[in-house]
Image 1 (cartoon, helix red, strand yellow):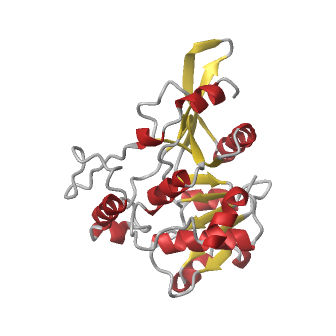
Image 2 (tube, rainbow, N blue to C red; image 1 turned 90 degrees about the horizontal axis):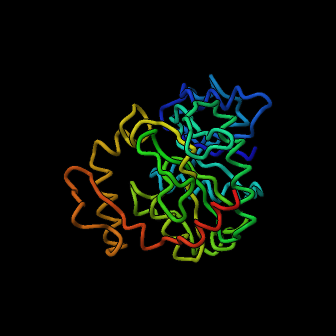
Length: 274
């Protein structure tokens, strides 16, 4: 499996982190933390797996950019960049020989990621512009079609560092430090604007608390209006992508016009080949 790079804030006992630590055979992983949290994390994880952030890096957008640069420094080709509080994993499995009959089955996190990597590898060979992959969040309203091209990825992404490292090194693609939230959404739009694509596996589903709702993480950022600030910043940067009739800053509601980036022909082509 490819390595995990996981920014973590006040969640040393995260169930997801423990699963990665205890995986057999072992998985290469790095937990990215602030220096003042080292003591708590060092009780649970080997020092080789802990990366201390410079004190000047605070915002999540800056942390994610640090991870990109660290991955390139480590000569990674592909990485997982994930939140630290993912909980359960499911795969929608079809009955052999019957595409109309299926069930959603919970699987181990390792089975989930191993199977996903095989699909991602196959798809990225079929289309070299694919550089970012993700999954369906939550088990509700699972789409019929198995994948979506060019949509929001969110809490976890599989990123082809090798294909975009030239743009990263030149600063053409980077996490925008002006964002305190929606920095991952902005990054995805940057990829699209540079001619790259992403793919979301709709039948690979994970659950996790809503961003900012769990203890630790970005809880403080969100309680101080971080989501609203992120929506406002995104709208100013991409005024044609926020659907204004649904946007509600006070309630933190927004909808992005992902249909502007759709590639239905590629979707159809890839669905036929997976």
